[in-house]
Image (cartoon, rainbow, N blue to C red):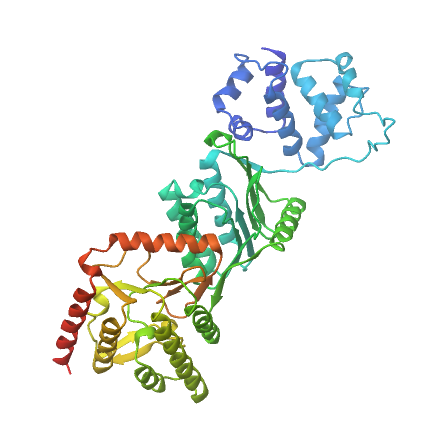
Length: 511
């Protein structure tokens, strides 16, 4: 048996370390540990594994009794060295594993001296700990571990997230993506809040994928999004997830390190490291601007202010939704329906006046700007339950869903036909089925160069808005993709008008 084999076996037995545990720490196959112990394989004197074994032992042996046993063992071989110094003890342990005696350890003594540069050799570094994950697969596993740890905490905490790396590490594995989304939803449902810094200096397709992943979570109101307003030519790309005071994962890569086996992700739980990473994140966050704003409750009225302010500006306007909208509803009908709701008189009057103002701006804008609405045919073919149809409150800037009877719905459809027949700039496309490009519950409004908004039909949901340039470009690209999926017939104004008129005739029979 070689010196290395016998001494490694002694350490593992003395400190009750299994082959499997050491192999996991060194990221090697357990069979290699067995070959070392049996003497069938011997690492070279300069092998990185010897230094890794020493580092692992010095981190693993955390209680005083184990450390004293190790010091006693090393002092027997290196009586002249100051083994209280961490680096000296580390170097001595590596030499001992190699089978080198004290006489060959003179180079270690240089580590002990207080040299003429005034360095205080009595200041010892603290030994930290971390878990290391290799490759994009390892990065994905560390991200899942991170979220699972968050879910294990009973009280709500704040999550700080950012990723400047290519988002293929998230999207290339559909199984991971589904699990990642599911865990994020659970985190949000448990009351944890998220601050995320998005990187918008990306390819449009990556921004679109980012929006698709995060929009549903923003609509819960539990997520705050930011972006860095200045273009950054990064030499080092970071992914940093922090569960404040609990755990963090950090991944660093360069633009030249695109191979899967070049990626490494570290997970920390050390309080000092967590504090340092959080300080870095919050300093970076202070230089950022909000990317997405969320509105709910009474603040929904601010959304209408944004839309009114931008409506007369030059540019196309697009809307994609699953139901009729307040924009094409007659003002008198809107007023009657609001009066039937549960708002107080002042709130009712406020919404009625805002809607009239919105309609005035809408018709004025149609003289100069193209306006396109898209929704599925089912939106005009809806069945009435007990002769009442419900619309989500967020669409009509109300706190409760809006109730509409058959006669009201017919009046709304007649008004849409009137707009189609009198305004060339207004177009309505009917989808044969909801587009697979977006969740069927969501509605999107996009004003070219000014804003994009997304809302949900869910109760107590939010409307979210962004005006960042690259993100708006991604929304424009999204509408182009939707447009290409619509049959030519369904884009014909005359066909759409006839389709709606047929529905009106059918509704007459229900009245």
